[in-house]
Length: 275
Image 1 (cartoon, one colour):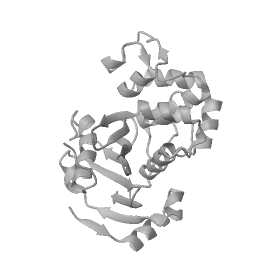
Image 2 (tube, one colour):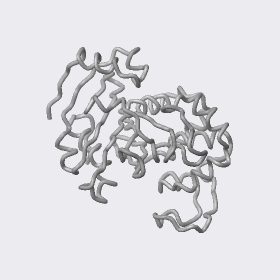
Image 3 (cartoon, rainbow, N blue to C red):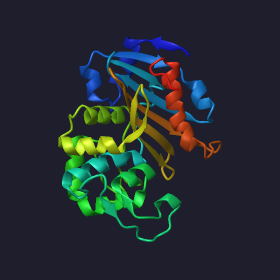
Image 4 (cartoon, rainbow, N blue to C red):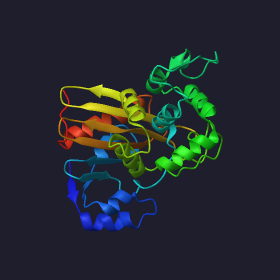
């Protein structure tokens, strides 16, 4: 894999972007352009990826022209939605249960009563839509503004704006939000963040703990599939946002492929070893 260090040229490109995350302006970070074509070609898609290595203050960027473009967050919005529900007390903890409304939807995993933890794992849309309705549009807007999540646009309906409405977020903004979440720089209680991080647990080994969330929006143009999160090791934290653009050649395996690409990239870059 080619790794190209071209800090001056890339910073010039990024600084010209309207949606540049503010921390890139303020931090003396290293920028590495990486060629990940083979990983996306292997799953018949295009995509972009950003990785931030905290210890070495280094960004690994693939397709830098796309990283500041904004897309529908889809189910990656379940991270801020979880935080808001806990902070407002609408959800008491990870075991907060909402009864299933008996409406059959596309995923059989959704056809049951859900706790907050289950709904996050199953990416259960109806559960999070109900949380949103209980919080109300005004309260959600207030908290999103305080957290500076994405473009903070809640138009399109209190239970739809992150799916088919005006909410948009870029891969760089996903990284910014995840960093502020993990480093406790969001205007939220430690209890709220601790519970959310526990719910986000996706994988672990002797070498790392992974907290992450998938997302897929098939109703927007372009269609986008996300995998965002962070690996915690004993001496470092790696944040990542993988944004994949499904097409007519994509298969059902893309649900897993978008995750596998992240593991393969981390291993190839020498950032983490997976058994």
